[in-house]
Structures are given as structure tokens and as C-alpha cells.
Image (tube, rainbow, N blue to C red; front, side, top):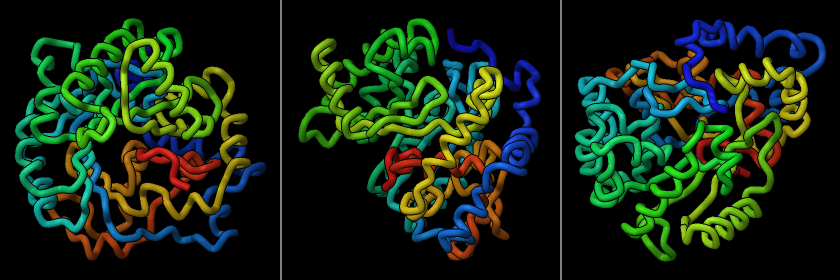
Amino acid sequence: MSATKSLKKEGSELAQANKQIEILSNGIFKDELPTFAKKIKETNQLPLRPNKLEILQINVGYMCNQVCDHCHVDAGPDRKEIMTWETMEQCLEVIRNTGAHTLDLTGGAPEMNPHFRRFVEEASKAGIKDFIVRSNLTIIRANKKYYDLPDFFKKHNVHVISSMPHWTRGKTDKQRGDGVFDKSIKALQELNERGYGMPRSDLRLDLVYNPSGAFLPGDQASMEKDFKKALMEDFNIQFHNLFAITNLPIARFLDYLIASENYEDYMYQLVEAYNPAAVENVMCKNTISISWDGYLFDCDFNQMLELPVASSVKHIKDYNEDLLNDRNIMISQHCYGCTAGAGSSCQGTVA
């Protein structure tokens, strides 16, 4: 059974970013395992520097209709952090003038932000090449006011990237809560009806898989074949790509690792699976992450750990792409999650 409250609502010390950093910086990383900085120094990749900016990832709020066990955002219905229209206007100004070609809206459930539709309408006019909304699918069936989201997405040619832990009810509901699987299937069918996920369709529909336990994801290509076969045979559902994403030891997944006494074993797995080739393609090299209150981070994970960009430009209102491109990327031990095996980021396998 999935959690019902966020760590913040429960008053957990792991809701505090500095406590998470403390855990990730001490213990086995004091005397047993190399820190991430030491590891990438061995392969002459320290300091980690950005490439050309390609993606603006905007977190429009931590409010969500679900409370998932692995959530690095610690999102939930009780989280009230929501991006204001004033901050969205500052983001829009940057979107209109950036060299980035991809806009990636995330949350929480981004659709729950009261200004979400207006923001999408305005941002879609800016000529962004790939306009992503990360949807948990169940939001489409959560309330009548969301029932038309598939039509809204289609109207604005939104690229929908959706969470789907597994093609079976049991594994999905265990990670995300009772009833999530059936609502997700219904939402996927509705997206298919609008043309999303169809072969040769420009309406992109991709799924995201996160492991449900303390282990790394399997091969992305073979998992995609399994997902496509099962969803087609059982529900006549089609989609384009599957992204297999490694769970990072942050927030609720870190809480799970510690509570299940899997933390040390999991960190050993990540370190042992370290792949220097994956470092070259991690999301922080071509992405800027913008928090709900407009602050800038190297990635969504650093945002949750409150590790801001190492730049004089800290907030979207002062945005300067040239200055941001000339920075060192902030790192800690959670970065092993993006460089394990084939590598992983919000865009799936990276190497």
C-alpha cells in the first residue's frame, strides 16, 4: 500500500534537504565508498561542466493527487507549493528568448496548478520544438475538470510523458496506491483515442518506468518490448517509447531505503554500476531546472536537495544564459543514480 501523506506533512526529518545531504555525505561515504566527486575526478570529469542548453525543465508545483512510494519530490495532495502566475510570466519571458529547444513541465501533478492551462497556451506560442508535460495519468480521471485534458494536450501538440510502474495491476498499485492502475489504463486508452501513441503519429506518448524496490532498472529496450506486448494484448494500448529511470536516493525513496534497511546495499549497487561514459550525457549537462518559486538548479534532483546552481544567476527573473553556461554543476552522492549502468535521467537511458 502506498503512503498517504508526504514526509513534510508527517514532520519527518527526511523532509529537510540538509538532513538528506548529511546522510548522503557521511556513513559509508566517509570510509568505504568513494564520493561522486572523487569518482569522476578519477576519470578526469571533475569539475562537471554544462554543454549547450537544450532543455528548460519547470516544476510548477509539488501538489499531486498521488503519494507514490518512490517520489523524489515528496509530492502529494498536502503539498501547497504552487508556482504563481507572476513567476510563470518570468518563465515565459525566458522561453521566448532562450536557445533551448525543449520545454519540460513537471510537478507534482503539473495539471493541478490553477494557471497550468493558461501557461501551456502562452508557452505553446513561443515555438518550442518539443513541449513536454509529465503526467501521472490518474489526474485525467481524478476529477471532471480534468476529463478534457487529452483534448487540451492534443490541441497544443503536447508531448505526454506518463508514469507507468508496470503493466500489471499489483505492481503498479503497490508503488502508487490502490486503483492507480485502472485509472492509468483508462487514461492511456483516452489518449490513444485522440491519436496519442499511435504508430507514425506526431502526438507523442511515452511511458516512464521506475523500479518498485531497491534495485536498478533492467535494459530499457527489452523492457519497452515487454510493456508494448502486454499493454497491446491486454488493453489494446499503444505508446511510443519507454524510459527506464533509476530511483535516486532522495526524499521518499531514501526514506524507504532506510526503513527497509536497504540503503547501504543500494548505494553499493549504484557505485559498483558507475559508468564514466554515462557522465557525458546526464541531464544536468543540457538542462536548467526551475523551481516553483523561480529558483534555478542543475536538475530536478538538485532542486529537491536545495543545491542551487553555482552561478551569480540564481533566479529566473535574473536569467542570463551566457552566465549560466559558464558554471560548474553541483554534485553529491545521489548523482551515482544518473551514472549507473547505461545511465538514467528524466529522459531515460543516456548512454
